[in-house]
Image 1: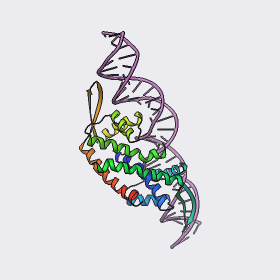
Image 2 (image 1 turned 180 degrees about the vertical axis):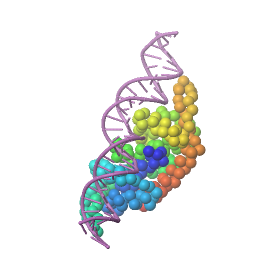
Image 3 (image 1 turned 135 degrees about the vertical axis):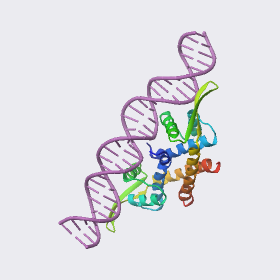
Image 4 (image 1 turned 90 degrees about the horizontal axis):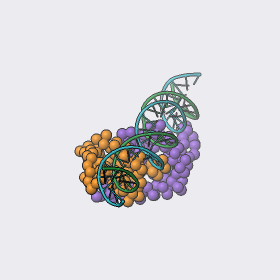
Length: 103
Length: 103
DNA sequence: TGGATTATATCGTAATCCGATATCGGTGAG
DNA sequence: CTCACCGATATCGGATTACGATATAATCCA
């Protein structure tokens, strides 16, 4: 994988968790579009296994529904997911102190 | 890999680059110690290949020396490395805006 | 019906993670 | 000088991940 991509691969996952927590429900295709507006691209071969892993880790729960003729899996955050996001926020704050402010 | 670890694996690499830029010269073992003080652990099987990759990507350059009886490889940032760090800073700023401030 | 569209899933190759183990060079005791 | 030890770096091997390509599924519309 390209080095710059390696730098931010983890952020994409935090981003997914963030939207699951704040937007209530997300779906794979929606996340892909949202990330694209931020300049990130995720191939389906990466995105869907990542969602499955977030679910298997207990951070997301999934519910399949059909709305407006679109069969989708709606992911939302679990309590553990919210806790993990809160913890990640703290880590990111430390990072910012070190990498941004002392720059 | 554990999900929380996945979240921040990339930041460990940014961290390495950051120290190469700001501390002038770093070595593998020194980075491992420094990361440990921030609560991160990196096994040698991850750290050294990562340093090699950062070098192969043109972000770090290496010079082998022996100081105080310790044979070490001293890594420092290249111009491309500094540029990549600056770019990463911008990305991190956006990250902070989205994940921290709108929290 | 069947072609187009949207969402999700999986396959295969390459690359990464990481603990364990090996190697390498220098030091100091004997 | 020799050799057991130590810090630093390197590599091995099995599991996991990345990701483009391809496949499957479900719905709409002509």
